[in-house]
Length: 520
Image (cartoon, rainbow, N blue to C red; front, side, top):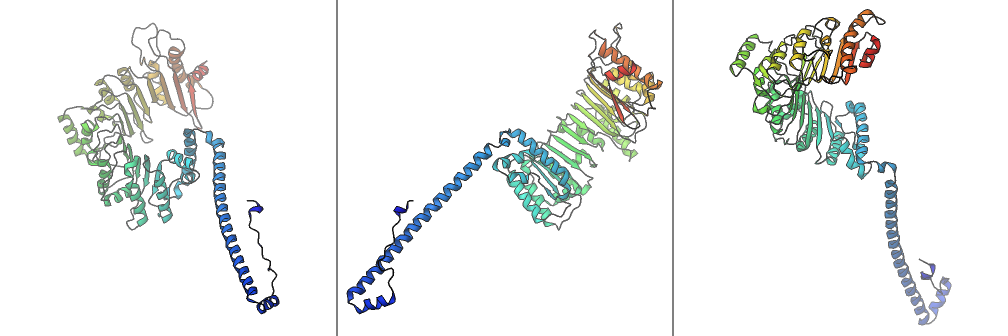
């Protein structure tokens, strides 16, 4: 606005003083009228100036608002030109996931409610959308004193991830009924159970809280459930609440300290294709072959532990034989872990697994006896020999029985075996039977083998002695026939080989090339 547009102040009597005013009063009424006219004129001018100021203030407010909008738009355009904006959302998610993981590793133990992406979600609208996808996880440690700040963090967390599939990790080993904030946050997480995609419930306290809950859970979206921590019988009710409502559960891990029969878990889902559990009742074997486990493909930690009651063991084995002899399942991958006794595979005598493709046997440091493989051979003889992968870790099989297993499963393509020095030096060592003779008409051992890994736990003396060469030569002969010079096409080329030597100070891993060079 120009100065010419401003109404100029005019008052001819601006310098009027008291003496002049007295002389005016002594004059005629015309002098008094002149003064009144002057006052009225000034009042109108003040009113005009007030109106002009109001209009100008309105204009200032409009200009300030427009200026702020322009500044915000400027900042937005500048942020769009920021290099991080050029990253695809998928890359940004990975960056956020790395950040959240690092924060998780460093800080998780200090939080009752853990939400590392919360700080990221305060940055901008884009980050607020991306951050939950990078870390859609709710972590609660209910053994920590839950404060009102924790409640606020969880409230914000849930407001950001609403309707998103969630990963829930709840840890609670001790049950404190009087902790109201603990009850509140646990109820908040249970209240969004319809969003649960994967859940881990760690500790008996979780199921103590569940026992008190009246409302029904909605876990139709739950795909994976992991239960950790020893449970007592009074916790089964809380556990069954979860399992009965998880109607689309595919992966269940109840194998860490949960000594519960499958029939007592109250499984309601027939969609399970991966199960990790301890088989602690003979009836559980029948459950595995029932329609409830018709989609089961992977079974881990199967171990029938009945040694605590010899009378029960006798009656249970009789029951199995009466009910049909062999229990059939469509399992394609089986992992038997925590093997400690030489006869721990005896339960395989009662199973028929025609679709078994991968078998993992895992022992532990307390297993010193040779693992009897005869039950495995017996089971495989009832199958159609589709086994493709065999892994034996921390177990020592009898070499003669291992040969019987390998002869009965020519379809094996991957083999991972551990043996001691005495096993490797024996005539029955399977490595001595793997070389292929082009002039022989006999079927070679494991003609489809493409990946071989051997672990030899032993202590070498310093340097390369005669014993080491004596051990490496049979391996070199096998490699030479399967990797280097064999062209007859009767066997698959060995594309991957590793020999792990357990040395006093370090572990040495040799490839096929390393072995050949050492022998030369």
